[in-house]
Structure formats: C-alpha cells, structure tokens
Image 1 (cartoon, one colour):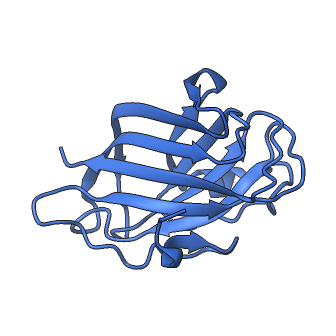
Image 2 (spheres, helix red, strand yellow; image 1 turned 90 degrees about the horizontal axis):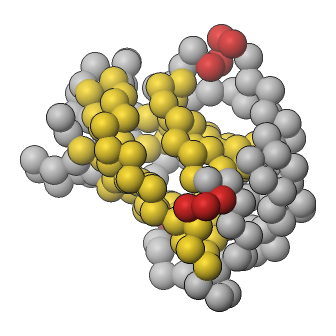
Length: 171
C-alpha cells in the first residue's frame, strides 16, 4: 500500500499526521485503518476513534461530508458505518459489540453507511465510493472531528486494514 505510514491508526485515538487544508479548499483525509483480524459479527466495533485535525478553520464552523472512498484489500465487501463525532468518544474495544452510552452518542454528529451493495468487486479486493453530499457537521469546541467504525456484516480482515479517503466541502 502506498499511503503514508504516518497516517496509520494503531487502534488507539490518533491524529492524521496534522494534515493542513489547502487555502480556500476543504480538506481530504487519507487513512490506513487497522482492524482486528479475527472474524467480526454485525454491530461490532471495527476501529477506534481517529482524530481528523483541522477539518474546519475555527471551532463552530460548518463542514459538509462530500464523499467517502474505501478500499478493502481482503475482498470482504461487508457493510460498515462510519460515525462522526465532535469530541473523542469512549467506545467498546475492537471486535466487541458497539455499546456506546447515550452520553457518548451525544457527541455524534453524523453517520455514513457503506452498504454491501456499494462495493465493487475487483477480483482480489473491493472498493466503494459513497457520495454523501450535504451531510452537515458543525464542529463544536475544536476544529477536529473524530471517526469510529462499526461493521454491519461478518467480515474477517486477515490483512488487518482498510484504506479510507474522506472528502469534505465548505458550505
């Protein structure tokens, strides 16, 4: 995989190597997300919160989720959800049932589903590109957002990673 190693998530809350948005442009983030190699069941935590820094120019700004691209090198093609938070949430361990409290979910701002029908099978791997233009998020006390993932299928990621690209637009 040719994506920068510093963007890898080691399963702990982490930043994306302090990416800086281009002046006048909304940021795009490329991540290598490490996931558990054991079999998952539906509604398991897929990956721990990852901080996306400098999503907005200042706290309280609005940003729109434009698109999410995901590459599954293990060719699983399972449905998954990416939950966006305005503060770092406390969630269950990887490959455990998503059991986030109501208080933690108050930090959630939006959710994007990559459904099983979104995946395109390319033989040895699968890719999905979901355009979610218009899903609006307001950063609260920082310029960061956090994402966490949960599976809606029963994948086994023997390679232990997914590649994500998340693009935003400024309204």
